Image 1 (cartoon, chains in turn red, brown):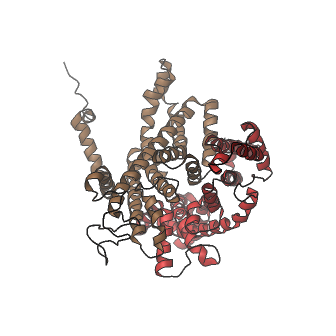
Image 2: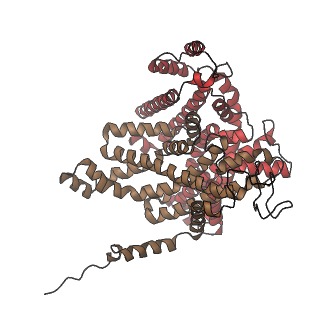
Image 3: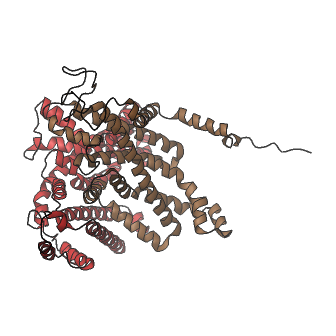
Length: 306
Length: 302
């Protein structure tokens, strides 16, 4: 087991190294941030001075090493635009993204799990077809368009919910639904296939042979085991939603890290953009590592395979 | 002297009419809704110049801004779906938008599929440290949410249709690489590959003659399921202002231009482009699901 954990951690570090190196390289390859930021009339001496100030006149490997050293200490550089550390900006916004991600995860579970279970228990009936239709729509309706339609219906026509900003629970409902919609479909599919697998297994057959009522078999025996992979995916999805909600946060003016990334892009604030993107990679590599190790604890077979 | 009768079971596939018959048979089994929607949209995209009533990028002369669809008060049949903030005809923009969406969707998928298939074959067939490097890079790519990665690249490269195609190709190749590598790992051990190697075929020849044809089905299925994802990604990028630049009639761009009017209740500007995206993605998903079951039983649980 220690060997397994060590190997996983090592893999994660390699992944992180490649990812940060790629991002670093892409940013450096696509142009001089100082020239992009400055006004056209700026004098060359001033540009050179700014470049020196930001450390951009040093060689790329040196810049990368400094960057990684700082990043590992939780220091992501200084935002061009806000004139303050990127990490400070990031952690100011993170709680909002966590709230939204958590709410969207709850919505995706509340839609996905019941629908998936009904679909699996009543497999190949009208219910199953309805659930399949919902799953298909989940993948086909763009989340951001769903957000716009929600605004139209609930804010403009019915005037029930505020259109944008953060505040009480009413601000969270629409962005969480728009964000969680797509993931609800993947929850539904996984719950259905996982339930079907468990329902076909020997111990469920035994439970049925014992004469236990359907409800007990499904709710007490099948449900628990079928939900292990579902909750694992929910955890991974939540981390993805926290980081990938850019367009939803823009539509609803939700002050999270997605919107911070968007602002950074339009202000050509490249330390900010770089920082937010690398933090996303950090979090997702982290959750994948945790999931891998947890699974190895649950299922010894995984430890033995490479 | 007895003659051995020719085996006619597979003969039909080898003649032109036989092949045509298989294609027709396959087409008849395809899901009707998906074929109708996809075929219709492809036709609309191809014939946009003929069927669009107005130029999609210039205002209609004498038309008002924000004219509603024809069935509402103030609408007219001359502009059946109304006009936008520059008094351009919405129907014409939607028609040309199909062209943008399909083109970016198909080309982006082609780029992603080519990169992913090439790397997957390389990784699976060559193995060793090449495999290690490619798989670690794939892991690193998968660690970023696709849309964040795409926005990041789009912001740095600047908005243009070809940039978007390349970016989406660079973002979405990972799934191909993983799945195809797995497939190649088993193909590599099969007798016909081993025999070709023993017969002295070069690695390149084995890949071209034996590996590639055998992973094409999988690649096709993956491609059919990627198109919809790429179309939504393009719409998202265009909506955020880092995708297809104005005044081109991209559906995502139309949605972004409609945002200020949403509060005023001018719903048609938001609803129509969205329904177009929904229909096209729904159709590709249905078609992809069907193709998956037909071409590759192993992928049924994907």
